[in-house]
Image (cartoon, rainbow, N blue to C red; front, top):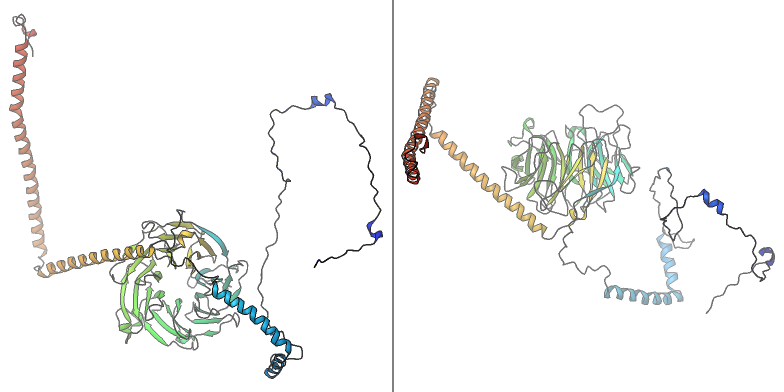
Length: 603
């Protein structure tokens, strides 16, 4: 069927009628050339002129006002019901459904829709549009591109008085948001009027934070709940534990009582792997580890004092500044202390003394970062003083690998979640170092100057290609690393495992050698007689000096005698050679010259 639509218009709306006629061409104007005008110009020969087929365009730039985005939500009501039917009333909806089902057209419509739906279901069963055809193939090696990273966004502290970004946490669902904790780390030097707020940023809107979290004290840590993305856990500067529900607003939903909280700032908070998703634990520089349930934050459910002497003395406890928990090892956790010691603990110990399993000593200052390798939990990374160290639980006396001593202090570090041989470190000079143990072990694969001020914290996204760094002035820089640093290389897991195992074996051999040497020294010290008096030591010293001088001169005299003997042995041979040369010269002299004077004789 052909569809035709006729457009109608009045003759008066067309305007004056145009009458066209055909006639011969006419010459209206004829301007003859003037040779005198050529004297005013200079001929340019040759001439280069670029000609484009397209029209010439001009470009102009203007400064416009920054466009600010704001997200708003609406409540959706159930629709599709007639006006006289209230969808909230169950009886009315049931009565309306029965009325519709008795309609003759209802069965016909269902039969038509049923055949269409059956056809779609058969298509889905026949062809899986989401099927991965090359799922079992090994990942291809990345081309020889140089490691690189670029800045995607910068989220700046909106307050006038700038504060340090002390902790970062990615949103667990899709990583679309980033929670940043802000605090002033200068003890008792916080300026007047400094804000206490921390913020949640949307990745697409760096101009304005999406949500402001208002605690009673500045936050040092902030963590998303992995099971419920609306719940956040924060550790405060005054030692309290705070909990937020973003559905309820910016104010604190739950807060621990000050009497049963930490005595110092809370530097570490981690969610535990539990059925309820409400259990967590925290640590502080007061030397305590506390377990909490956010359903009842009035007091901790459990308490452990970080006293490595296992006497549960709070005065001797070591101040904790970092915390590590791996969900695959639900009973084990690790604590990094201000004294540079890492304490390995087991929560299932019957007594507090049994809960502290062992210690690892290797840093000269606080352990600012502590994290297990996501692929090999037996190996873990620590960052402190001027180095980053990789440890193995099988080797407790020293680390198996470490970086060189940098000129700037290291502040944080983290493993890559997708590559077992890659880790990140931040420094006080504003530099981000990315280490690739497969590529090179003595130097970082990429060193990037992020900002001029010190970097304090670091967090890598779950997919491995986005990294966030927080600075001393509250600027959080979002970086995207190159494809090679965020993609698992071929056979990388086996290579990383062999590297860690090889270094662990080497360290064990060195430890056994050191123990053997210490035992020998101890045996010598036990078998040694009593130490002589000062007079005897002075006499022995004089005798040793005299003996050393005598041996020295004996060596000198023996060397002189050897040289004299060699010279005497060479002298007769030299005289014999000279006599033979004289005899040859005499035999070669003519007879007439023999009768001459002495001046003609050969000398």
